[in-house]
Picture 1 (cartoon, helix red, strand yellow):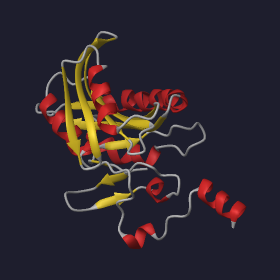
Picture 2 (cartoon, rainbow, N blue to C red):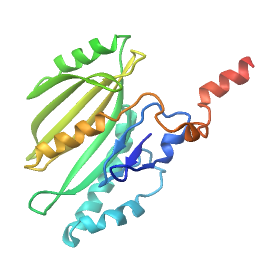
Picture 3 (cartoon, rainbow, N blue to C red):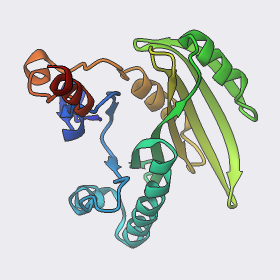
Picture 4 (cartoon, rainbow, N blue to C red):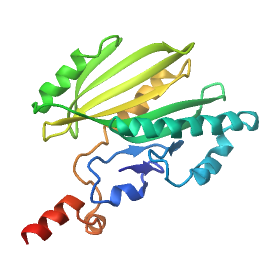
Length: 225
């Protein structure tokens, strides 16, 4: 599912990117940990330990609680089409710690040309303070920016609608944060993320050869020879 960016020139390939069921590839910068969307998934203890150096000791308990709540919410999100959920931990300009949430989900739609689907998504973004149509390497997309108040907090969110070339679904990518400043930085991060999304396996041939057949493909081959 994902390839997490380890540096400017190297990528750590997540195991989900090597499955036959993977249908969207993307990269995240350092500071994000994936939150499992299924209740029986392995705990994120190792990832939490890696990020502990970024979180002041007095905030670490609250951060762990935030992750546990996100895991509980992830199960519900998966039922509505979510395929990836991550929590980001970063330092702001003052040296403090700010959190963000990154989500990917699929939305089904009647067959629609990708460019038209992107335009409809931009027009439907009520309440957005900015909505643009852009051309990404993976195709046309709509990018929407909003600033809302939720539970007494101001939430800055970037959302991108990336129609799949098949024309029957849209990948929705969203990055949100309660950081009061540094929105320009999050805007740049988000555009970097969506600029690397691919609907075709972008891995080198030597790695693509190791990806097993999707279950549906294998079943069809077994049925029809």
